Image (cartoon, helix red, strand yellow):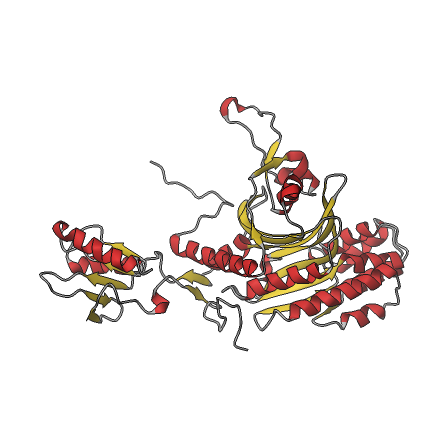
Length: 458
């Protein structure tokens, strides 16, 4: 049989790496649930016309077709490329059975047919949180969602994060204050600053959007403003542009920035970045981009914002605010670089040795007594010499080997790392807490963060 080649863009993890991913997923879920967000999972497929409304390029959507006969089955279905579009459909479909404001988190795979590269995959896992209400969504939820995501990421073993914030009302109000009739065209041009030069964007603003050279310069001056506190308000005022929508945007962005600062520390920073606009037109208020410090080459590993009209049934509109974090986008590159790893590939803390097949039931009872007390325990597969069973445990990363006593002798347990072997009772002995389950190890996994509370020793 020929060697199986990996499929580019569809990452599969070895057990120790999968433990790292799962531990991060579990920590995010714990924080989201601490704040009252309910978990949902949506179906894999959506109608193509609904997916296209999300503003995604058609060629990035995986279309479902029947292989038998090689013909399109006419269903018009595609696999979702993010979790926001299916969530909007989910809200419309279940609005009569949901309590609003509806607070949801969703950790699920998505599929996108783009060119695979570091941090970009065709199959990937995302973690989303959103708050959705009927017809009107209170602004304080924009503060809350950003702060909760910040708190959730602080509690993980991931490297430090930087959350960059802006407000679409702020930038649209600024453009309208300049008398620009199509603010969206300016946003799309300015949003390309991370991909092209300032000169190229300035030229596009003048030649393609139709701005004067002076107005184009002011738009770029606005985009250059960054601040880790509310000093950005004075920086914008100094540009001499006035508009009521600009005033609202400045006030809201300052409030979100202040609200997030309370959830941050040395492992998470927040700043206003007036270049951030987000490419999708449905954002209407706060917009967010998240970057992983030291890994800026991965670009944004998370983002989102306020949307007022993404979901509507014609009579009722469901405005919301949400943030998505790319688990695969951030975790898989860190695993590949060896920045994070699992301390062992199996959950087992103990291997119970088997002297011979006749005494396997004795070993099984010892294993069951350990398991009933919550100690992950594995029973030896075959009754080899004890030295071989110890080497088997070493290869699997299992720290302790349990030897059932024979002929009335007491049981003993051996720490195969130190070589220490002591008499033990399966109804009383426990491994040290750090050995009870695998651990995430790496640059930031051993920081002073308490993984249960997310609090730091500052």
